[in-house]
Length: 256
Image (cartoon, rainbow, N blue to C red):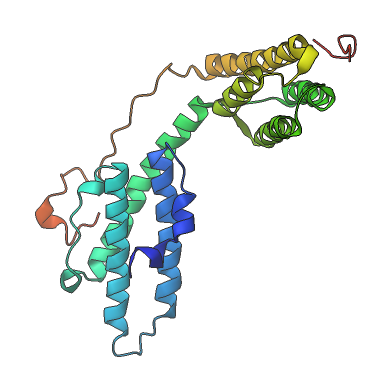
């Protein structure tokens, strides 16, 4: 099996940007599902079925190790892929076991990083933010002298932010992008720019207070250093073991 037997070009393009661990995890998830689909189609009664099965399994290891190299995921990236003729069922089972061991560490570490770059918003705070968004939308819709292209672009940005707000945790990047887009929009709010800035500031303050409270409660460090991913056994994985150990004035109407 080749790379596009495990993942499509469209799926590759949809992999997370600027987050190598998350991209690698998603790559493995998709590739493993395709391997499962393919091997379920291979008949053990077929004389060539065993060879086809081993080729598919070796192909899975081949693309996973290659992906690990691309994303600099160690020690998976340093594993040696055996030749097809040297690849057997034990090598496949061991690589699958070791890969699960590595993925568990990556998933848990990545979860910590996601929490560092996002915040859990309480229902009351979400309600307040939705109110600010509602009034921002009104200002944009009623602003005079704003062309429709700019108006629609700003409204779409509010839609995107509201979608992010519905998630369990709100991405701090989504908040930053919204603020930069709205504050830098030339003439986006017409004569109500000052009022719009107040609403944007309120959103930033609400999110900032929620993040500060969360960090104080969790006592998260200001920066999380990269986690060292280790193997499932205490001894180092030697290259010689690789084959068998695969590892309007609205001021009165808006709450401030």
